[in-house]
Image (tube, rainbow, N blue to C red; front, side, top):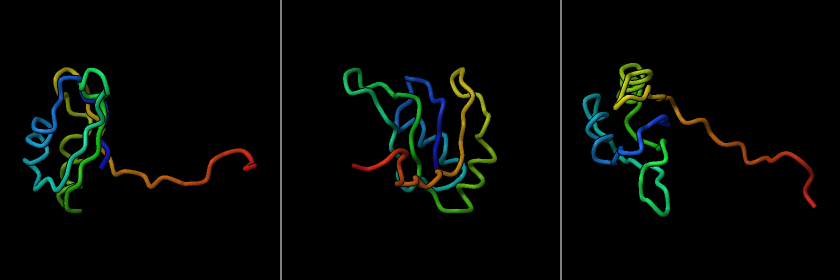
Length: 86
């Protein structure tokens, strides 16, 4: 799943705690700034399908430390890029 609009103070532990009320968090990766090590506002979480759907329903749009969370299934990336290849 993709989770966005996280506050910069968010840690893997705090986000895991938030999501674990809906089931077991299998893995988590928050994207952090290289220099400050603070959260850049988004990350990826792995949970079982039914638990992930419950987390999306329960957390999408929820206020978390003053920010409204965006939680949804991660869209598969299309490896095709625009423009011509040389």
